[in-house]
Length: 107
Length: 121
Image (tube, chains in turn brown, cyan):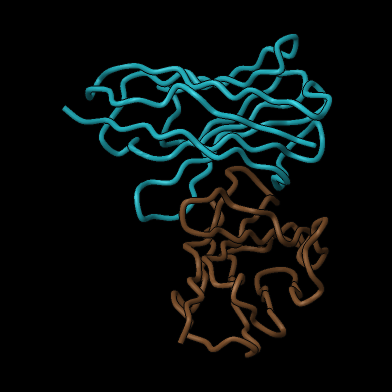
């Protein structure tokens, strides 16, 4: 099983700041990596797939990068609606596995 | 517009059974793999099970293998999760999620709002 590790667990930031979230895979997952955003009381929402491709309707402020075992999600200028928990997921192999999440909170 | 709506969540005793349903609309249901993903209270996301578009191939996580069964009725555009021998650790919101293609493994591009399963005496 590929273990996905996200860090930090929590990020305290101010609106307008640039933030970088990290996701590490225990083994190579190529570019088969997705990022999801989840707000309280809501279902996850797909942001990024294939490590760097934005899903439909996702603003250009969300930038995914990486391949192999190291991945990052950058939010270039944090908006109020971006405060949420972010999860990475590998889909290179079964079982599908998610990281533990990074909570982006208001500083 | 893709729409997924789960139902069937309830309070059930340990050792009990439950069947979840996910009604799908807005897309050609049989052409896409479908998943169940769960989230325990205050915890992260955990993949549970996947079925390919035709329903001919299914996958289950080790944590539910032998207890849960995923199935689909493409004539009714509905996904199911049959849950037996339920344990306290199965308590979670269960999400139905659609893949963007017929086969897996893949990511999920649409999610339902979820249904809560509580296993407690």
